[in-house]
Image (cartoon, rainbow, N blue to C red; front, top):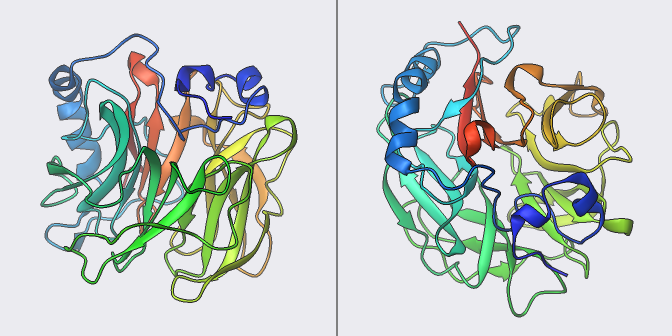
Length: 326
């Protein structure tokens, strides 16, 4: 079963009642559409100020941040907001190329955009060629920019939503037609893939018994494929978990959850570990970025200074960034 309206799947009770997953379909607009230019104008000054504290990828100079300090409140990412629903912003390592999905033309399509530096707004928004068939969402890109993974509900899948991959020969070229990712798809719903920076692990979300969403991961490589998917020790709970994002060093996992201890329907959580050979532990809500709405992480900068996320704060659903202070 697939939900065509994301609003039907946002709340806990409706997540449990269906095979829908957060951000695998149309996103909620709690207060109705908001004009994109108005939204960007409101966020412009505060967004620029927040990003000025981070890394200027355009000139290659790291201004750094204090990793012991909490993230500031999230603000809209400039240049790519629309009056429709946007989500799952993923970035190249230098944060100058964006991949996301949007319902701005009706169906949920995958887009790309670029910017000169982290402090500049995105521009050059384009639909990704060759990969959009039906509805697709949750893009994730390998660090070399050559392999794209995403979730889609389309003819030829294994059951419900499935995870696909598409390759290209250069970071600026078009992707070839997408293929199902071996070993991770079932007759259940699989969405929200996230490939780690070292390319050895793919995280994803599967709907299990009674409609619960659970984070899985499979190991291997982008070139050789991923095998043996299983749940993630240290974070799995009876609640609904989704949107896994691992830090570049592999020591922190961010995800969304409706477990007790949050502020809204879904909130951003994190867990840490001392090395990549041990489980994550001590899950905790990332209180500074959460509201009483819906929050889910989508990416984290290589230096750990910026957390990108999808949020319904402010009466709209959009792509946001929270920055740690210096």
